Image (tube, rainbow, N blue to C red; front, side):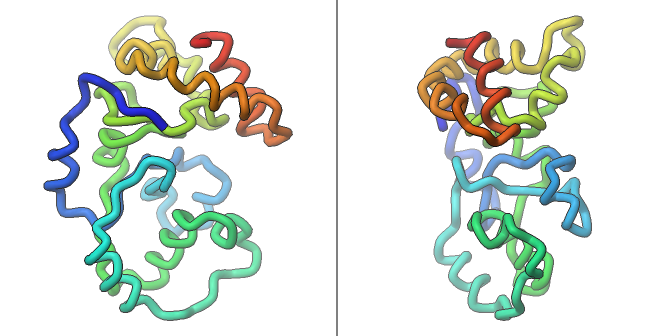
Length: 185
């Protein structure tokens, strides 16, 4: 993960009333389809902020109801587990940002191209590249990936991480990281 110059200051996010903040996922991510509302598929923990006192209270309010056995993601990743537990326990009061607010903080697989994010976490993920070749809004034929590189020139600092992902057999990591490396590294 890296931070982008020219973004909103950290204080903007610290002053917001969220218990947990991270990059939103593209609603087309396979695991997001398991949610009642895939468009509220947020927040990745790779670059995140947690209000720890509030999170302790929220977690105590959540029931110990198990997650369905067919949800392999929530058994491996803390962020996905938390979101699924949130859906089971909406009354626990976990305060999450909407997708538009979350993308101002961090970008991984979803970004609309309108603002410089505070940071990036693995922006080469496959679902991001599904949109990356399409023109970005209001800028002609430039791709979202090119625009992201212009808005956050620090993106090049992720080349060593992309290089490590490029050998992955995971189709969401290996091939897209090679595209990323070709453009930025």
